[in-house]
Length: 387
Image 1 (spheres, one colour):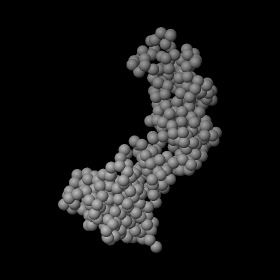
Image 2 (tube, one colour):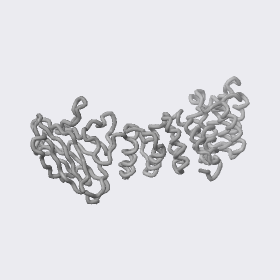
Image 3 (cartoon, helix red, strand yellow):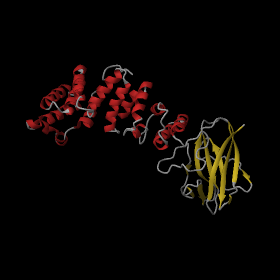
Image 4 (cartoon, one colour):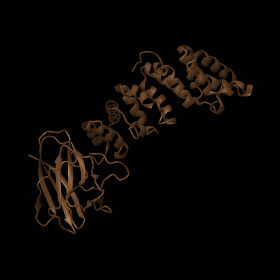
């Protein structure tokens, strides 16, 4: 976990320092409205003005002016945590790490609010092979701003090492305000980062994060082309997940969030109407008004090569709905290669055998409905492996 140089993360051409200043220490209201006014304020407001001048100087990479203004701000208001943290940032940008560290240690005594201070101490902890302490410092920053612009770059330092991933998991176990952001909600992450974050979740085997919380990360993994890792994560974190066909009674259909491929996704649109039954009875009601069959629902499977058997109930006004419901199993969603169903007389039960030959690592199981005058009830989907 050691960095190549102390506090290297905070010295990326001054950019990170300036961003932290703008977001954490704050360009005071006076400077935000009129930066030039900072040089013409009464002595009573000198600390605020000098903080402004120091921040502006850092933004313009004028390190000497930044240090000078920050020192003046400290002399005017030595008890302000923003002022002392700003001096640390200015000294660090000026290439004076020892003096910067002294300033940051003083700023740390005022609490956990200053982001520059916390990021500096995070870096020191990482350099000293103390990932748990470093994660606490990062947690302090992200709790203040879960959408911190440099969040993913900071997290990457932890995600790259097993000890770092474990430290992140310990913080996430407390469900901080940045949990959703970490799990990919509203973001686009590369495949390596997605896999590392899945590994972070898996490092806490005693806790299940739940289907809704884990769904964004699972969806991104599938879209990035790693359905195997996505399915492994889904099985570990979602109580309703299955190694075979999930949710045979259709009682766990996601309505408040986008569906995950490993659960039923309903295709209700246009001339296809599909919806769960009301109450807790289970099943879905489907109706097609088009001239030909339409897909009503689907889910992704990750079955090993072999022989399997699927069964289902299809009823139309309580009577067996023969010739109305068929299933398909293909390597690509939307392609139709229906299985040949056999009816179990008088029960409304149907079954079909299927063969997985290993052509694709994941398969799409789809339900197709033929046109009918009334809605068809589909329920009790079962799955078994054949010898």
